[in-house]
Length: 435
Image (tube, rainbow, N blue to C red; front, side):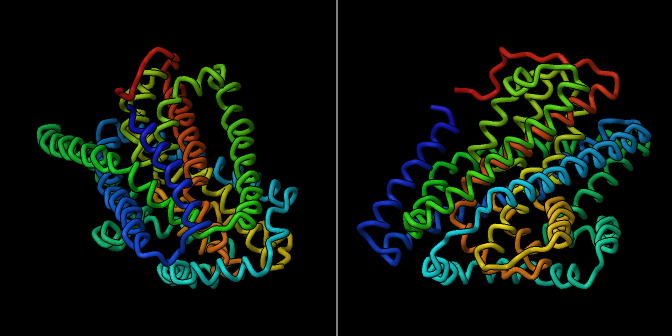
């Protein structure tokens, strides 16, 4: 049985057990105290591997290109593409949310109960973002843009590695990889060999960590469904449906446009060629964990060179968060509506900017969007405790928006390959995931 099948079985089993606990048991039952840590350990295990995976992959990607001009050219084009598609995603999310009004109709007593239930977790996440939130509040919109570029350069790269400052990690990794290309080949070779071996070791760690995914997903879903009642689930299903519609529209409108008009390929065949990366990404909710498979898919199913895929895909897995930006825009309006807060046009434009900037720094691992959402809400003056309302469904929505992020990563990889003179050749008969 394939891994993603096991994960889906774990998710369904978790929903069933959680529903039975909700209907016939108690959310304070002692057996839940043993189940909850399993899910938390799994998430921590995945997050533990993000920084080393991004560091090693980007160093290798930049060093393997060999041409400093090529690195700079590709980096600027990739960053521009990611910023454009992420902003488009946030704009689309605002439009969909204003049409669907996902936050209207939640019973007040349920709102208060959920906020009380998740108060501790929400406060912990808000505290983790307290310093960044304070800075963002004090800055104008232009200052925020300049601050993004300033903060890309870390004062201490080891501090960035330790704290998970992904923008700092990206800059340091690329800078190191570029500098490796500038030193004599005989001195660069041992460094590249060392990072290559370290890359294999980190990928093996990711593979082993993913073996625990079925049990982690089961535990997370039990906790979620045991907490939520059916009345709340109905409204949250409406919210989740609007997010899902927005994600699908973003793929069709934004990504398919590049596939049709620039790559000159059938978007359905393109999606079929990358389906295994999408399925694995959906099951793990992690662009970073899917990185090895994404590289294989781009090289074997799309015909992209290793030089391009090893540079663009690690970069995309870290800073390309289209799905996260769209979700944050819809979630912000949903929570504001639940609290009866009317967001002005300028406030909604702030959502687009803040969601775009916040999603850039979000790690490509499960739950990263929840952390940056607190920053978006605080910038708008919407109570961060509103995160409690959507905390339970984040796992499922995270799986869906990971598909969007991966589609964007692989689309840009193909676009960049063609811009470098490579031929995109779609293959549909390759199986990347062993049985």
